Image (cartoon, rainbow, N blue to C red; front, side, top):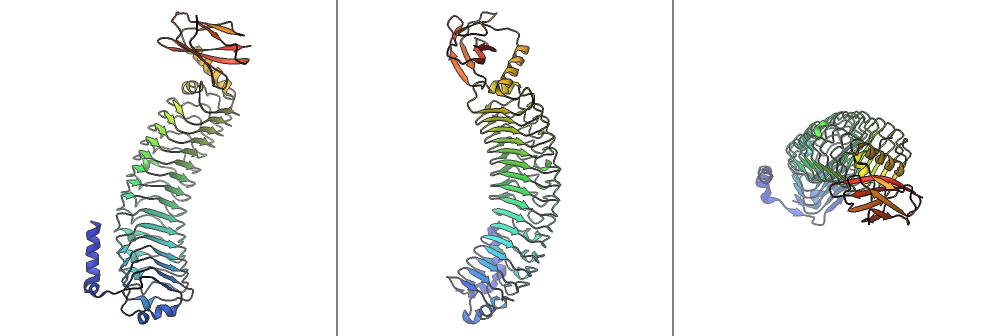
Length: 492
C-alpha cells in the first residue's frame, strides 16, 4: 500500500517535470553564507536533484529562496544555527530526502509551511532546540519517514501532520512541554525501535497511539508531570526491550496495559508519586530481564497475578507502604538476584507462595517490620540454596538465616502429624534417627544454619556420623518411600 501511495504521489507531484530533472553534486554541498544560497542557480544551472548531502549552517543565512528549484536530495539535509531563518521558504519544491532530515538551533523558525511538497524522508526526521517552532502542519503530505526525534521544542503543540504515516522505526519526543496529545500517530501498529516520551508537561494521556501493538526495543515514560493514565496503549501486546515508567507525578492508573503479555527486557517502575497500585499488568506472563519496583506510595503488588517468570534480577525496594507481596503469587522462577530491601511496612513474604527457583543471591535486608519470612516456599528454598543468602536488619523472626530456618522448623513441627526422633540430641559423634512408622530411610541431608548442605548420606541402621561437623544447630531432612520429613539437632 505504501509503495503504491509513493508512486501515486510522485506521479502527481512531479508530472512532466520529472522528465527534465537534472542531477548534480554527487559529492554534496555545504552552504555557510547567504551569498552561496543566492548564487546556487547561477553556479549550478538546471540542478534540481542533489545527489549527495546538503548542509546549511550559517548565522547570516536569512532565506533559502535560491534553492527553490531543488526537488530531491539523495543524501541528508541538515539545517543548523541559521538564526536568521523564520521559515523555510525556498524549499517549496522539495519532494524527497533520501537520508535523514535534521533542523537544529534555528531560534526564530516558526513553521514548516514551505515543506508542503515533501512526501518522503528515507532516514530519520529530527527537530532539536527550535524554540519558536509551533506549527509543523506543513508536513501534512509526508507519507514516509523512518524515525521521529523531537527534542527541546517548547512551543510545539501538535504532531497531527503524521496522520498519513503507518510505519516508523522509532519515536523520541522529549522536552516538548506544550504538546497536549499524540494525535497523528494513530495509524502506527508496530515500532521496531524505541518509544521514548519524556518531559512533556502538558501530555495527559497517550491517546494517538491507539493502534500500537508492539514495540521492538525500549519504551520510556519519564517525568511527564500531567500524565494521569496510559490510555492509548490499550492495544499494546508485546515489548522487545525495557519498559520504564519513572517519576510521572500525576500518574495514577496504568490499566491500559492490560493486554501486554510479554516484556523481553526489564520492567522498572520508579517514584510515580500518585501510583498506588499496579493493576494493569494483569496479562503479563513473563519479564525477560530485571524487575525493579521502587515506587514509594505503592500499597500492593496486585496486578501481577499472571506473572510466572522473571529472567533477571528482582529488586523491590523503598516502597514505604507495602505490607506483603501478594500479587506475585504465581511467580515461580527468578533468573538472577532476589532482593527485598528497605520496605519499612513490609510484615510478611506472603505472596511468594509459588517461588521455586532463584538463580542468584537471596537478600532480605533492612525491612524494619518484616518478621514473617518462614513461608513454605522460602523454607524449601533455603536448605541447599546454591547462592549467597543475606537476611539482616529486619524484625525479630527474620534477622538471620538461622532464625528463619528455626522458624521454618517450628512451622513444620506445628503442621506435621508424625514426630521424628533424633538421639542423642545434642550429639557428639553419631545420631540415630527414628520414625514412628518405621519406614526405611532412603536418604538423609543435613544443612548448617546458613542453609548450606554439609552431609548427604544413606544411613546405616538409621545412624549417621556427624563427628566432622562444627558445633551448632543443624537441620536434618530425610526421605522415606512416600514423603520427606525435617527436624533439627544440636552438635556439641
